[in-house]
Image (cartoon, rainbow, N blue to C red; front, side, top):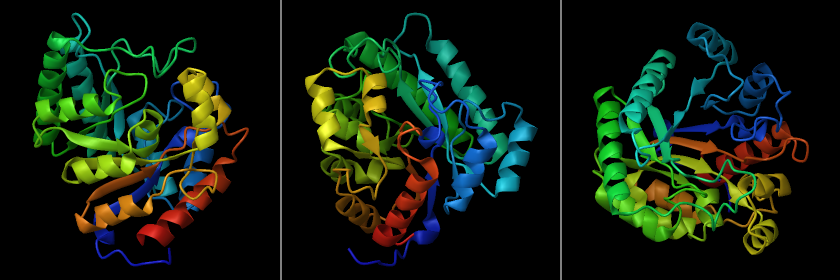
Length: 306
């Protein structure tokens, strides 16, 4: 597709996650990469920011200074909720409040969540697709109630909470996704569309984006290598194994199998406003982060006009 202009460009910011350089689920992947390098290469590639990584400063003034020096913003913070775990509802709300306070201190407005109670995405010996939890009726009730509560806290603080369907969790398949968004209040709970995770789970990201365009509040843009995905599904890979084998890649990589143009067109048509964040979750020893960042930034600029 030829380069085109997006008339809504002022409402959209383009970011990239640190997961192309290192990994929060499996910290030894790229763990020797200093956060200063991640920030410098993020800025050098033309991105406006990213989320915090596990090796970023936890001291807020230090983080703010590092962001200012690099000219970057924070796209969001990530919260793994545990609303469905026995006795952890209030603890999860407390964690949401802590992350809201952090976001306000660094000038961010988005909080991205996924329910991680009994999740297997961080378990290296279990299949991310077939060993994931299945919620019962009380758990669905607690999850919806908790997300609405957390989303209202975010909204009252001038922020937006977006739920991230994630492989290895209880909200992974299309029927899970439909149920969660039917049970939650649209004014409190938006969707974080992660194109790679839903594709890996067997959900068409284009159809999901079409059905939930008005509900999308945050976007993680990644592609999937079809040959690796086929092996991962057949071999019942763990998330760790799938990442090391290279299941995910950046938009613009010809090895990726997702067509992003229909998604971009939906976002333009519905006047999407918010962050579009590249998230590759790759092993930097096999995929140079700076090269991949530049490829993805050029692709988004050409295909989305921002």
